[in-house]
Length: 368
Image 1 (cartoon, rainbow, N blue to C red):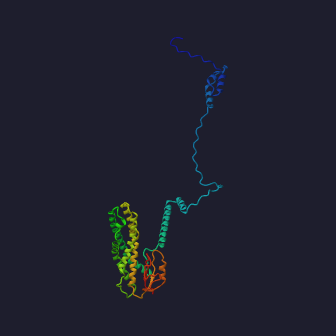
Image 2 (spheres, one colour):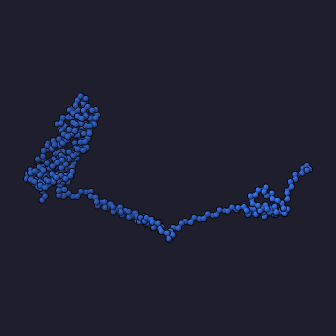
């Protein structure tokens, strides 16, 4: 090979036309070695274009994706031959709202306006019904026996309230005095003998507190009788004020002293702080639960005693029942006795109320 000349390519072996035709008909996946082994029959080589077209025809052509179909809404109605499902009926107001939803907005507003009007009318009617069921605020105009009882209550009510306040203050003073003596108690001393004051001193405290209020109740009772009996003036005999004050004092002092004595005896030797707590509990019970009842009972008794004392001799009086704590058979028996001349006892043995603690009965002239 001369210098500088290009290398000569190796000779290409001649391929017959029948061999090319066989290669074209071979499967697309035959490798080159298999195609090269086809024998040469000396024919003319075929054109390359038809071979390429046949090869492309054998390759699978990718199918483009089908366009997505638009979703079709399910029909709003069921098939004619299908049975409708059972559904609960709408409440009336929901049906009205459903009907209004398919109408112009003005109809919806008018519907809500009607609903609001119906609701306001129902509320107004309910208030009227409740107002009819409740008793009126003002009491009816007093008349007859009920009027007499109400008059008496209006008179004695303020007296009872004032006496209750003063008695509570007296109980507090009495407690403070007892606690002072308790602080000076020595361990060798008996608490009940040293701490409890003399009974008379203690009773005098409550007599003095109750006297002016009981006097007021006595005067009110006498004036009440004078208002019921024409021509009868207020009697100078207003009843026994000393006896009324003593009764009030005994009703407080005696049960209170019994409670204090038991507390001090049971707590003998205890710490003074423990004793002070027990003493305070005894006084607290009286100030919160008992003194108001005692005050009311004794004011009512003073009023009734003075009303009886102011009645002239020989005047008939009947028993008028007023038992706030419930029916009392004894008082009912006295009512059945009718009018009794002053001085004659009623069936229960009393000449005038009260027949028992809590009794608020009243003596009045017979009905005309």
